[in-house]
Amino acid sequence: MEIIDFHAHIYPDKIAEKASQATGDFYSITPAYSGTSKELLSSGRAAGITRFVLLPVATKPDQVRHINEFIADEVSRHREFYGFGTLHPECDDLIGETERIMRLGLRGIKLHPDTQQFNTDDKRLSEVFDYIQDRLPLLVHCGDKRFDFSHPRRLKKVIDNFPHLQVIAAHLGGWSLFDEAFEILKKMDCYLDISSTTMFLPPEQVAYYIRGYGAHRILFGTDYPLWSPEQEVAAFKKLHLSADESERIAYKNAFEILKE
Image 1 (cartoon, rainbow, N blue to C red):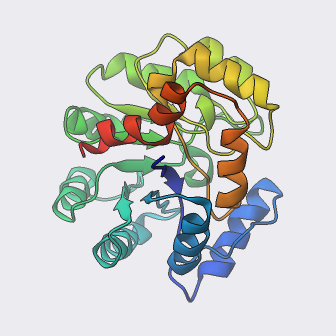
Image 2 (image 1 turned 120 degrees about the vertical axis):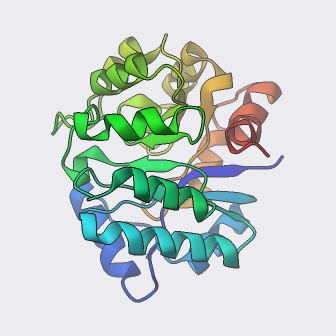
């Protein structure tokens, strides 16, 4: 069975270990890997993963352009990679950078409200959300009981206000707020990924959420380098889903979004 990792992060080799550790520190987690593309490809292939969606995050507006160029370059070097672009609400020209993301051949936009420190429904991003409707998917980190930036109710507002925006809610819509996210997002028109869920929830609960949302809305993701791709694939297989559910989550839904 083909497997697409729809939630992976990489960094330039010279800063990878430092960047990976900073992310780990943010969540009080020791990362499984240093975050280089070489390690992602090696560990992913060993796990049976065939493709990877790279999701960058710029914590400062002046990082956006360089990070998007780095991701585009990695995609050009490795046929296994798809790339999303990053934005920051303090960018001088959000629409201009969005257009540049498209020219670079990147497949969507990733936002991380908690580490970027803005609300998911920040009005500064409304023009972008409107512009990318029917153009690019938007993947958003969702949920953290320590903050309000990425609360799933904020994503619900975005979905309500931009009905043609293809939204992917990371971490089953609400990391550390899984039940609350389920109540808010279960009837919304969005996809969700299962990255950073299987190590926090028992398999039967993950399967419950998957079936409650509908397997046609779920994407597999590892959240590399925080977690081991091999362990994440093993945990996915322990969910004991049907063949159709597994195939949809592993690659079919991803290909629909990526238009492959």
